[in-house]
Image (cartoon, rainbow, N blue to C red):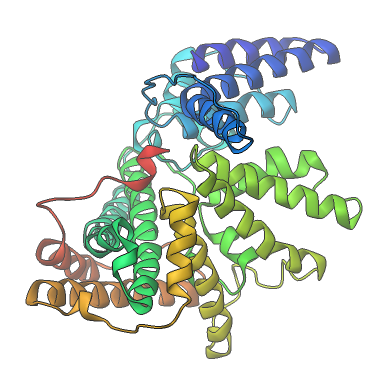
Length: 421
């Protein structure tokens, strides 16, 4: 439905010069797409939040929710097709007359489920040209698939073994174990999501398509602004171009700039899921971003700046605050996240027994420690060479493949985290 509506809306936008008509057509696209997204993803959330709000005032309400099946990848393809109609409205691109090509753009299988969120100006023209097989381009895709699999089945799924235990019953663990649970989730979600993106980009290259980079080594960021230039790049640039800048961007008064930033981060959190935990997670990042905006230091660190040992304190501090925020992202409720952090910051018990209480736990711990070290080693050298992705050689690809075979989780693998969004 979204594909057909936006295809027809864009064609009409292309053929008319009436400002009133064009605004009305754009409104149709925005309302239709966000309406579908809102119904499937947020209907029950709003109903439950409404009931809870009245319950806090002492008013009991009887209502019911719907057993709604969330369409696969709806958050991703909704933003992808929306950006197309907005760009046509802004006359940044010409609407296509080929429904098959447009449908292929919206439903391109490698990145349909969890991104990257592609722009029509980048991906759609690739369906219009004849592709000639490029062995080097395909080989780079194959190596990227291997690297993505390593991050997913070796790092993310092994981290999940401990993360699930700790977050399922955080009250039974020491402050140190809770801290390690948050750190392991930071690596789990990165290995899981960036691993999927690498696999999607690599598969697309096998078919001769180029997709945008979605992650650029975010845990080497030196402040929160740089983190968001490196994390989920396709989403952060989408919000920049279609929300932040239309709101006024960095123009206007200090209050207006702060307002625009907070709106973007809160909406970004809400995009991830129908839960107050995601909204708070987005708000935390917004609050962390505000001092950089006020002091005009939000662009101090750019992607082309190489790392030195002087940057290590900033990198570690940024990783620490990002890790603390991840607790809200992972927790099922705000109350659980609050209790988790309260127990963590009590600093009363520093036992480490979960990770060493038997040979199985010790083995998992050693696998995680080694695999994360391998990942950071490869990423560090990629950063030093100003590369946007890890480029494996033939021999390093063989090494990583061996690690996947012997250290990967295949018996009870975890689903990709972002499949739920």
